Length: 223
Image (cartoon, rainbow, N blue to C red; front, side, top):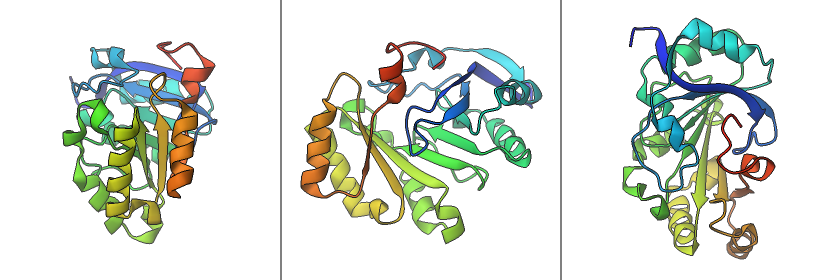
């Protein structure tokens, strides 16, 4: 792969399905490659090699949708170093850029203008030991103007996941300063159950559903 190129799985226009931006039209740039093997992954196809595109081509394709947001996702987008140039160039063009990362790699080098949506993987994912604690540290140490560019997301599949996430969130203090989204793994946990747990425990986490899974058939690509 040459400098200035990225391995792309797909570029598409859809409704943002998760995070505090859920419901907004969004241009998605899905990078290929991950290798972490999360059990609840709904984009396993992105683990395979895609097509090599120049950054200029990627930007042109994404901006053609004229969406209010551009999200960089994967796979795991931070595996490809050139993604930082892509994000910087999009920000320089005045785009509102979102990054959705699995939380395995540090976001320390991500352009400060990018809104970072960082996953925290619970036990059912099979990869909870791979969560990078540096991302929580970076968020907590960020100065106030940049704190607003961090948010965290946990997708739980059962009560064990929920209790694990609750302990981590309370111990870290993330809910005191950041938006924390908590949702259900589609088809594995009834949304009502999570809602009742959150209400009972008075957790300051914001419940979410994976909207794209309800709008389109699960497994549909390009949504």
